[in-house]
Each structure stands twice: as structure tokens, then as C-alpha cells.
Image (cartoon, rainbow, N blue to C red; front, side):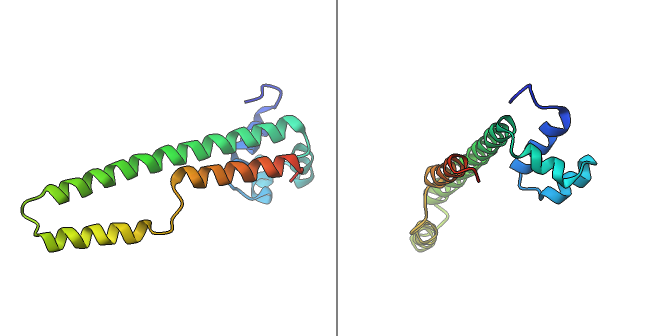
Length: 125
């Protein structure tokens, strides 16, 4: 994160990266909307937002991976549970597969989001 930004700017960076509306950010920080708009034109501010967005996305992906691992462990335990009959196990398997059908992987979604951020950065959005 840049050290050239003041405390209010750093707070604004994290709020923007988290998806908070500009009007709410200006109100929370006690600044005018025009001030926030001017900050958003600054290259250091833009870089800080992009860095914060990437960090947030990476944290979300790590969290989703952990949940996925726990879910898979639970499924494996169910498949090895002798108390469940084969019909129940097959229903669990079919339900799991139906949820995955046609879905992007976590990495695919991350790459798409990073591509969007890069595109927006390159074209000044």
C-alpha cells in the first residue's frame, strides 16, 4: 500500500475496494464527494484501490478453498460411512455433481475478476 496517501485516503481505498458507495464514503469521512472524485483520478490512489481489490479477492478465494476442502472431507466421510446405504451415497454424489455442472472453478472466477480489474485500469475506468 502506498505511503503517499493520507489516513482518510487509505480508509477510502479500502471502502471503495469493499464496494461501498462513494456517497457513503464521503459522508463517513466527512469530505465532499468532489474530493473523493479528485482522489479517484490520482494514480497512487488508483493503484492502492487495485491492490486492495486483489487482496480482498485473494482472501475470498482462500476462504472458499477452505470451505471446499471441508465440504469434500464431509462427502468422503459420508461415502465411507457404513451406516449409509448405497442409494443414499449415490444421491449425495448426484446432488454434488449437479451443483458443479457448468460452474467455473474458483480460479476461473478469480482470473475473470483480475482481467476485469486490469481492463478497467488500462482504460481508465
